[in-house]
Length: 311
Ligand code: G3H
Ligand code: 13P
Ligand code: ZN
Image (cartoon, rainbow, N blue to C red; front, top):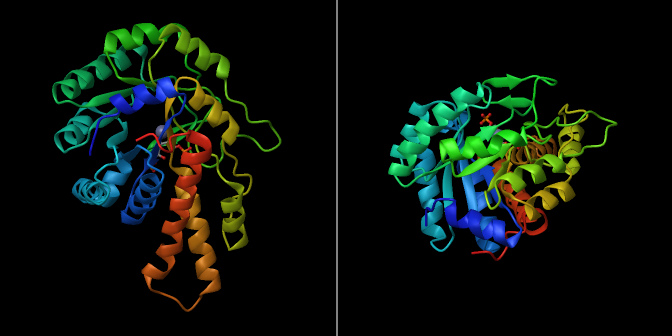
């Protein structure tokens, strides 16, 4: 079933776990994620960025997700637009079969963010689609927008009530120290999310689902694999998994993961090429890449998100 995130988030909030939102760009990624989620009986969010849509084409991605739904008819899957940057893009995804969209105007003023989000919410709700919004800015790269280190800003908890009540959004992404990409913390420093901000936010909007972007943990086994087989990713560091687990126990209902998928695939493809220099059939090297995505997602569902068996 293609569903909205409404029911998923309510159960996750009450149950102290989170739903994984995995970025999808091609068939192998969709297969890896949905195979893992179906075996573990976990609901899942498949999210598509503007860049993914440009790369793979909207229709291809929707049809691939429909294929997964046909294979796993009992699994609740939400199809979500990640970091929508305009009303037009959100509308196109709403009209084109998505069940959830994010409108990310977090780099704009509070007033512009409220106005723009409200407009998307009105259209989305009229079409049975839910909306994620964002307050506060993460460092790192979000599609074409690069927020430099030092320019990011934590979410101000005193603004969330007004934002949520004025926009009527369904979930809220906040900035508590995560960032996009594979370089989230400086080497030698202790990665630490601002749980005080998260708790303050939840006190002001109790029961409201919170979203964590930039939540890859950058598994060191994949970083090692990349570096061992010809890559160069020194000091790639992610969010410690115990902190993600803790966030999931609190009000965080959606945890976004993209970089870990990229690392799992790239590490394994590099290894495959190094070990089989004569192979040139894409099926040969995409097979271990897809299996690595599946294993990584299964680990997240079981050991980090806590969403196994929650269908
Ligand atoms: O938050 C950004 C996601 O990792 C998507 O990245 O825009 O390169 O597809 P992308
Ligand atoms: P990562 O780069 O940490 O995987 O974050 C992904 C994300 O937030 C997608 O919106
Ligand atoms: Zn994001």
